[in-house]
Image 1 (tube, one colour):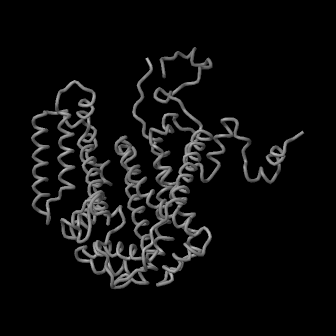
Image 2 (image 1 turned 180 degrees about the horizontal axis):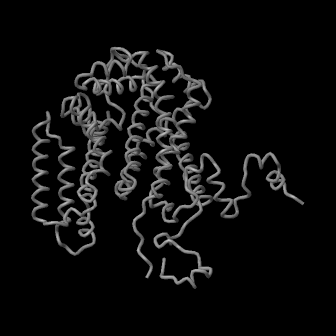
Image 3 (image 1 turned 45 degrees about the horizontal axis):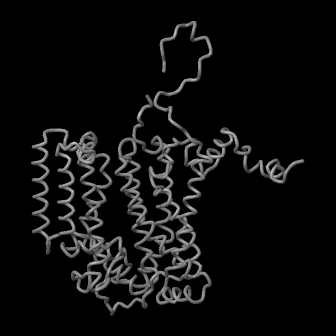
Length: 244
Length: 223
């Protein structure tokens, strides 16, 4: 007598999707990882010491997790948001008072964004102090620095979107700094703001960068970053004391 | 593990070879790594849900170009940069310094690798100490006199880093001092960067009020 689970696993439909058996043997566990587009970013086996919590505090993986939380909550927020003046601000009020889980979504997006900046920064510090930036992982460190910059830009562009006083003046501070660039200061500010001052064109620019442009770059960066851990020989581990 | 083998032994079945450096414990990615990832991710989500239920994201009144708040503050992760604006013109603090920091961070692993791995105090200690403190003095003078105000959030971390690095030169039989003595120059440079980032951000977030004046959070509140 077959169980329902066995019936499903034996069905032609299931076998057409999952081509390996139940992952209770090392062969099937290997197949589960490397026959899966998403999981094969990992190696099939890892050193046991490398996955201990205290080795990395899981900060890299949790930064990636935060990115997915932000993608999901951001996608849902996009349903209720118009990048226009003054609708953007009205939509903030609607999220708070009209949309049922609106405030919760916005809170989650906001706190996850702050957490991501902090996690990415601490992840960098831990990576440095562990010595994991050294050969052969030099380039993965460079990608990581790029991802830190990407995280900051995502946060910065998102900061304008509520179109409140906090958003407006924070972005003013930033764009005035960019204006100070020698030679091309004016052009850079014009490119960034889409005008002489922060107005609706700025909002649209930041919105498109925040929701499409930067996430595309960062998601490719994250994929490269994790894949290269495998390609560079796994997580960096200090040499182990040899058993006598 | 390739010992000398005669043709007679080579023909016999041999026990499976093991790579000499690869004899440590391995774990299958499924389930060991993936389960850890899922559990850590879910724990983080639970924490985030609680924080989001308890604390609301801020929302002030609608953006008004004619009403400048005093002080106008950037988000906290840029307040370190904004704090630097207090000391240097925007072209230095807003453009060159951040660019320099990002470039320096990116090239750390390519910067004279053997030098980086060597403990700072491996060579002649008197020469090293002389050079290190000359560098610290020159940097201190630069930071004292080039800015509009003495840049204490960079100077104090510099001294702390210098003291920490110098402790390594002391031949004191203690584990802590031996550990400090085994650190590289890169370690101390990065530590300085980290302390500066924290100091600038803390001052920018909690100790700056109207007109970017120095305020005490427990007296004047947080702006």
